[in-house]
Image (cartoon, rainbow, N blue to C red; front, side, top):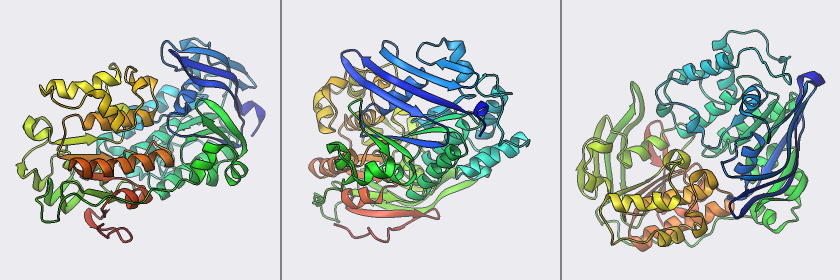
Length: 510
């Protein structure tokens, strides 16, 4: 790729502090054309804050030192000190970003095609001096361009005419990757793009980013997934507590890790010793689905689903991305009304969904969705978000916020922060604590470990299993991670063709 068509990103001595906490400490980074650079680290390591620094979108009140520059033949942009107009010229045209909370990239009232077409129209001819044109982009119609992009991301182009809420979390995530590449920027930054995807879909996205990098672009992949980093990364940095503790080729670093936490990530295994359900199979279920049919418009997602979840039991739900796992979770959580069939919670037949369900029934179900940044109010501290359910229900006899935080392994020091000041994994823990606030009979978890590293995911999965047995809560645990389900669920079912079938290798009740 000719030099005038390329751009690179250089970071030197980057420090970021929020209040008394130092989130990033002296980070150096070079993103060069032709290289897929991976930043690997556990939840809370500072990975997402690093991406915000690289795009000039740090939270208000951040204290910053160091240098972040986009360099090209047409000059350079000082990202940390650029004004809003300069950053506007860079975003999308020079730097494409795949955010961790992919669902927040789209408005729910317009189809994907309309929104992606708007991006094409907004970008227009590249105006930033760093990107006068793209040599690999042949003249094509806008529709053909969009169809090619989403197909490359592993998404059926027919889904472009659907609304975001009609897609699974994994499908929305792939659409977000396509949106970031619409303008063919010379630099692309992807924050956990494979979270919530099954292994095949995750590999498709990682391969897409690698191919994009090898075509002469600079690409950064931020992830907690060791397998993805090792299989597709070229250069690797391991970030721990805001510091780079290892640097080198991905295969060398992960093949022979030196830092203790890198070794722990590489050798992580799910814990065994799953506790037995607290009740017998004859105990009435807290969730009963019978011949449930659900979908979006004319599109049928679930077709004749039967499922029971009993107190103290963790039922895992597996399936490929887009199979209907999230729709099943939404039906169980009483937020998606089935088109046909019967839903019972704690022996009560439920008709309707959302606010149409009596509050006394709604409060029997705790719901943890796939995207915590979409679920948590950005204006409220975590402490306030955790206390609101109890206050709204008029209950002052329940667990204090601090006890809920301890139950899910959330640092008490984070309770007085807003969502923008914590990592995705930490925010997911807060969302689980909030779901437990009213002592529900049923806890529905949709990809709750998707943003966590293997070690943290294993601990959280084990925690959910312990909570289910100790508190007598029925848990519906949706995940693409079969290893997690084997370790954390008492039995696993598989969504296939709109129906539930026993998962071939995990269908033994424990």
